[in-house]
Length: 217
Image (cartoon, rainbow, N blue to C red; front, side):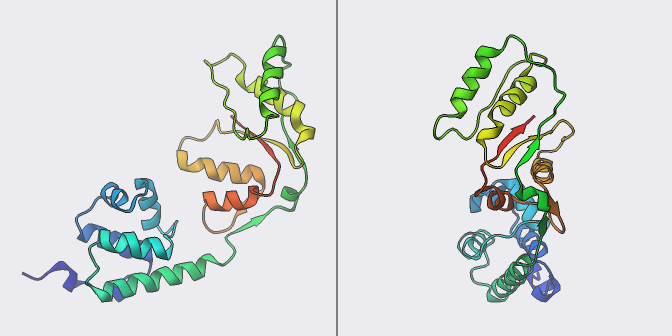
């Protein structure tokens, strides 16, 4: 019986995603099983195999190679590293551009939202919480129709001048798939996609030096 590995040439694979998928299937691993072995969420493995994300070299060699059981197969390790290096070089090319207005103080809150009546206590409480040191995220929960959005927008309007880079509303009403959230957020921030979908790292890089209030609804 000829081993399946002998029927494929490593040079036949032109992207790291295609090669990782082949090696995963050859090792009889599902995406979830591989994810568990390399300590990642299974959705990350799906994005890697679609060439939407790239594991760093340390993770690739320390986790993926043992998990794929190719430690004693230098030709496959060599090709894996070659494709990882190629993808890394490609990744250094511009993958997004930033709208010039994204670097100015913004006010992207609806000007015609319904007036807030009888919520002075809640508004004051939320503003006090936001102004405490270390508070980065605040979630307003409640049943539909009680005015969560109106309350959030009123608080954002009141706090607008305290944020050097302004405030924006990110409307997620039309988002049906979780993996679209980052793209909608990026679009709202003025980050224009030019090749691949923005990753969490791209957004972190953009936001890390900003003082911006983001209302996500």
